[in-house]
Image (cartoon, rainbow over all chains, first blue to last red; front, side):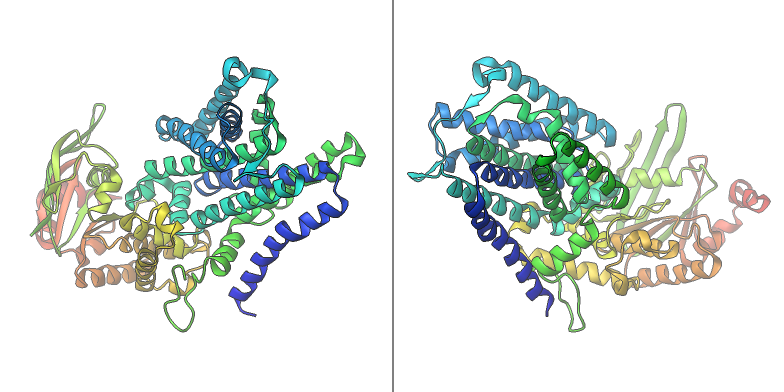
Length: 335
Length: 252
């Protein structure tokens, strides 16, 4: 079985799981609550995937990711309630708002390194969180915003569980595909060079500052899209959804899955959203169990469940086409 | 044709003058060695040329245009490739990915080209990367992690990464540091070969034998000043050099 054939099989398998098996199972057994859990798992897969680009690939420890998720959610909620815009507009606009703020924030902070950068993102996350909490005229503060409009697209009512799920799944899959193209390409290599030694990358002709800002903007964009999905699916948003705790949860997903690994980030998100739900019968013990899983995974697989090396190998050889040169000659690049 | 022209380059760090009014030229196709005792300002001079450190005075021209004051990556894109004294590879990337960064920086593979899968840019990057890897005989190990490479091979990896930039000037900062005699010998042959292929090379080196054997011209620095500039034999006989550098070296 050729690599590419196996690749197709794995990609088709993943899509079948997301678009056929999961909705079928949810329809068969589903209380509406399970649908919400499935939506949430997908939204966090996108959040983890977007943080992966900045923290895993470009190596910038981002401690305020949830704030951009929040900016997207509030942008979508306000555009839907105040301007009556449908999903087709709120999704990209939420992404653009979050990306804009991410780039503005990135401009002065990008010259900071390692821990100083991390603390700066922490401060920015807290600032945005406090704005959501205290700018009552716009965000309604701690009371949050209700979206009564529901999910609509081109006149179709998508507010029933199955259509909602399919919209979320499709948006997340398309977004992850874009992140896959970015992180598994030569562009991704340039970002990885920043993580490894940015001064050295500079001496190779890589415009490091610009690249960091780009990565931050793209990551913010998809966090914003995730926020819009959350606002529309949950129908209610409030500041605690976007607190520091959420940033840390996303970071944990990325680390458990494997820093620098996109499939790892997605897997980490599924585990950390679905595991607490699966353990719900155990009541409060489930939180301890989740902690144990986190701790054990860091202890025993510090490189993550799907490490960067195997993720790159898989993604390039099998999804992005041949990066290896075989006996026949120059089989490289995309294709 | 003068490729690199350093005129009155000066760099102060507080009260210390690391590079003091140094002028030197490198013509296209030349291979020039810069020697001098520890702390003579060799690496600082290289950092001034590649834009890591700003000048306190003087100017640097490359290929006819001033490059001092430009950003490091912009200088690199003009065709200045370099290696580092203390090996700076990307340890958690494969050899292929390490070397590709040199080509990526020069060709500017942006996010859109990777989204569109721009085959033209990608093919060019890949071609350059493979050519550079083959040049240093590391193509067979292209997909191993750089962290797993032996010390000697890391040196060649760094050179390959600079070669993937297709630079007009290759700056090598102590390439033989940490290598044994036979490895140094092989490296000398390699550098001579590069030069024979038309590469302009500027080389800082402690290993006198290496410099004297491959460089047609040697610049000697001591305490930040240039004290000699000429053919290896002339420099070796220069009393000032003997006193400030070779004498010290023999005592050590």
